[in-house]
Figure 1 (cartoon, rainbow, N blue to C red):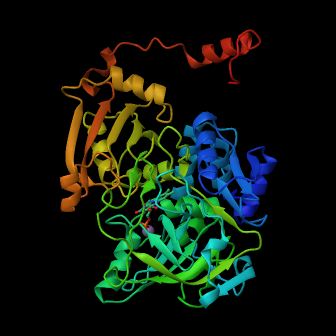
Figure 2: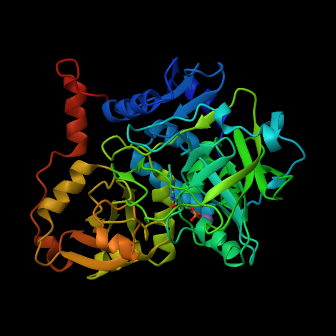
Figure 3: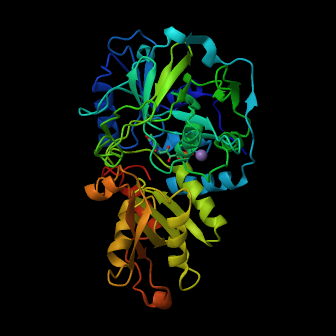
Length: 485
Ligand SMILES: Cc1cc2nc3c(=O)[nH]c(=O)nc-3n(C[C@H](O)[C@H](O)[C@H](O)COP(=O)(O)O)c2cc1C
Ligand SMILES: [Mn+2]
């Protein structure tokens, strides 16, 4: 069932080139230019191209960065091996089906992989060899880790976790790490720290887009991201046993490191500020207010002409990370929780989750919202949950807002819940609350559905039928500048 046609980031870039989805830019400066060009492209161009930066100022040709890997609908579909001529919503549905049907395929260990083409150990370790950008003007430093993966192993169960965590380039062999409270990678580090030990880690800075998506979407603690990636690919991920840590290193990664995260009481650093996905700076007093963990880097591995995968956070108006895997995962988790007749799921950043259902009984909409608040894929970082009827496409903000404006009676159709899992990144978290360590926020649920009891008396929609609209658009396309439908 897998149509994942690539094996690594380079092959994915080639695939995107063949589909006209790639723009190459030479000569940009890692200091703000790469970041600003990425943001401008994402903010101003619909379905923006992927950007491959080469000949970066002060760096040898071939040492590249890649932005907006999955920012267009087409690239997201290519990354997941889905059809290119389906709508966004149909691909979310197909993604959910793929997740449900995927077997768990563990990685295979290989002796050698291209990531080992260049090896730096001991005093040779120098992460300034790579053109890590400063993305936003008040960022506290260069960030090599944005589209990265941190890999560590639970000492009790042996679960090998993979998660995306921003990494600041402090020194040639020292990285800063921001792991928000409650995150699985942090829970694992904490177990080592509680025993006064350092946590061994691997990190990658350039893996294929499917592995990257799996790395930043939340599955229950203990369910292996590696096995999930293998299942979605339909073939195992090849890994090399890290010579220092024994942890798996994706063999086709562009850049990888091995190292350890000492207990913060032993070594920690100021981290950030860093422009984050809500569109505000975070870190320092806008984080937990504490010094943050570091990775002591013991070895660096990289391919010839390495590519840093960059997924710098952009304010929500520019954030175009297409989310079929994230939405598909929530769809699957909701069905596992027993929610019937889901017709669509979508995230408009983590702050707004929209689920469409064909209502079967009174209370169905509320049951769906409760499940959204609790599922692994959506429990953290939320703000609004919107439940809509099946005639509303959750990926289409015009339709979602229409439902919120016309099917919600504010006095009766909005619930709020306090004390939900949030992060210190939340710009609306009051300073005293952040300082007290209570990293929770409230959630609002909008039941933007026709009230079940009198749904048949609800006025009929006057919106032009899709078939008629499409026919008219085709007929008058030469007269008016309609897009292709
Ligand atoms: C580009 C990107 C950067 C991220 N950076 C961080 C981060 O710095 N700290 C953090 O706690 N979560 C970050 N996340 C979210 C986590 O990757 C996500 O919650 C993931 O599920 C964590 O996996 P784990 O709980 O299995 O370790 C980021 C997500 C993305 C997409
Ligand atoms: Mn995990």
